[in-house]
Image 1 (cartoon, rainbow, N blue to C red):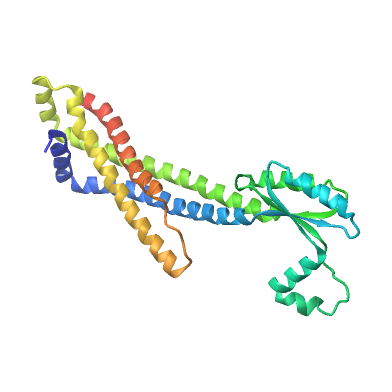
Image 2 (cartoon, rainbow, N blue to C red):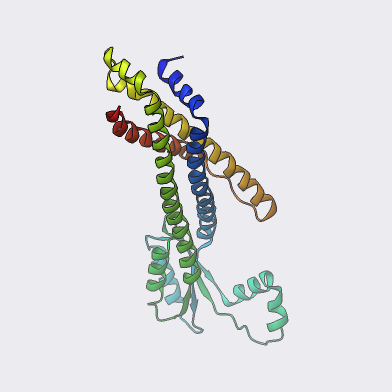
Length: 285
């Protein structure tokens, strides 16, 4: 086994409690990030499914000229955000309401006339379903004089996007806060390891060991601590995912790239904290 890895493992044996505390703090910080990341990812997936169904519906006034409607339909289809435009007649709207809303028949079944308006249903391209793009299309359609009203669910769409931004922001803030705490604990562990080996480090310097050679075992120790913390966090996050999915509501697990990034983040926090501590405290021995 190479010298640097052997010395890093010896450090774990010398101070297992402190090493465990360092890994535990990294695990806790990444676990919280994982929980919020899990929430943010599932909100993202819900948004994608909602966005796939987002459409702008323009309700047409009774008595509108068919030629005007057809011309508007052609113009709207040429909007860069629009994928398809469908005309729904009053009769088709009534049949759809009776098919999809059973209570509609009991409320309006006795009417002699059709109370539903004709409409244009505007489907958008996959990359044009954000709130700004949808609102822009709705505003342009609203300019046609035969359009009575335009609906696209702007309020609930804004709230869902806001929820996703809040989840992402909370993930970053909490993750950063706990990462700082974990870095302080790792720094303390490295400092104790340096002072425990100060005589050995002094002898190594006397026989010509470079600063990089002395520093490497401590950096490897930080990486190992971070990886252990990342794996622990991933395991606990998976357990929380299973519990919530089975007892509350169904969730989707994080992509492999996200889980790999979590473990890599643990290693990054560990090596950065170790590098800072080594650079500061090696000067004192």
